[in-house]
Image (cartoon, rainbow, N blue to C red; front, side, top):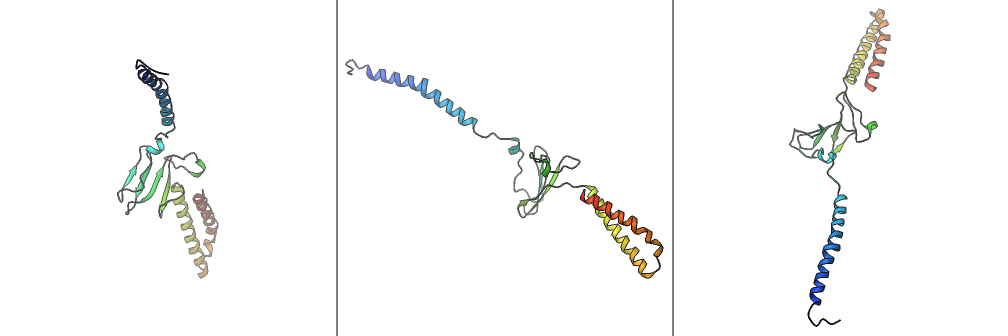
Length: 167
């Protein structure tokens, strides 16, 4: 094909421009849109992520109320969380709807809750054991045989205390 009047270069340029505008650019837009839709969006989990280092002795509170307390070295020492991450069996909740994690050697420990019932149970067991020792020591001297009736209720106190501790 000869172009004696010089129109071929213009025709080729116009065709290339049309192909670029009507075929190549729309295809690029589709691929860019697909690529952007596959990019993970910042989730609430990301927004509430707590830093692994902080000002020594400080506490950082995320927007959702989860908090992290940093030790003297600026590393995490204690976390208080509210979200069970879809695993309620692994995350017991306290009366405020949260639970605790302690950090040891850079590793976050298992979830636990704090309960005054546990403290009361430990106190009840301790007091019951001490009183049983006193009653038993009193029997050794032969003076206090009459207070032996206390051993039954004290044993029950140990049982109740263990029930409070173990839940």
